[in-house]
Amino acid sequence: MKALVLEAADKPLIYKEVDKPALAPGEALVKVKSAALNRRDYWISIGKYAGLKYPAILGSDGAGIVEEVGSDNDKSLVGKEVIINPGYGWGEDESFQSNGFKILGLPDDGTLAEYVKIGVTQLHPKPAHLSWDQAAALPLAGVTVYRGLFTKGQLKKGQKVLITGVGAGTGAMALQFAVAAGCQVFVTSGSGEKIERAKQLGAAAGVSYKAQDWAEQLQELSGGFDIILDSALGDGFAKLPDICKPGGRIVIFGGTAGNIPALNGRKIFWRQLQIIGTMMGSPADFKAMLDFVNEHQIIPVVDEIYPLSSGAQAVARMEQATQFGKIVIRP
Image (cartoon, rainbow, N blue to C red; front, side, top):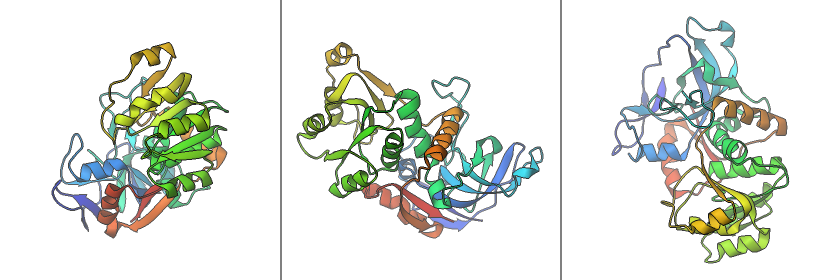
């Protein structure tokens, strides 16, 4: 089969022939119809990620058709259209992942290939209203923002939400989820064009995080936020408690702009604020996310589609952060 292979951090991704995976009990072979990229794939490709191993086939997100199952599995799965939950080994505690938790695409070979091997427990029916490309764009970003907004953030209808960095796949999806839940949503971006795209998806307003007074602008526009979903951190994080309503929650799941700066703890305890960490989600979160997507007929935003043979260019494009929504790869 053809796959996109990373042989070392200082080498480009190579489109090459590799062996088709052999199945063990409990596993299925999925013919990948579409895959999608995450920022994780970019960090792995430049050697800035924990647990690196080579050679590696990247890719956490994917949707396709079950081609074969292990000898102990239900043969009726063969031919089914499925979407893959890329996080496995969560453990028994819903509040946090176990030490054995793994994400597809490292250490195990991922979806940037014609076929992927995955445990049958990770397979779910593809939402019928989604194309292959749209379905592939959903899993990792979908479960991450669903857990951040609902499981951890306890989002309720009518609340005010701030999504920082709306152009990313997680940012665009978080906007769609919060709007579908009946919330008033505000966004930040460094691009006026992305803010306009966000408004088309239902955002009430947006501001540029490049403006010196971006926090003051948001406070004036919104009157304060019940939930802020942030994946950047960095120096700007110090302003987030100032624009929370009393009792507000700041949910974080990334740190693309650096570490959390010094904070005034008095503001946090006096106003009963919470800073909550999250990442990915449990199997229950993934199932709840799919139910939510099906109920509200949410369609993930696909930015651009590349053939697998051009996958190296697609991963490299993530460095520029010019996309709005998800970059999709078609084997």
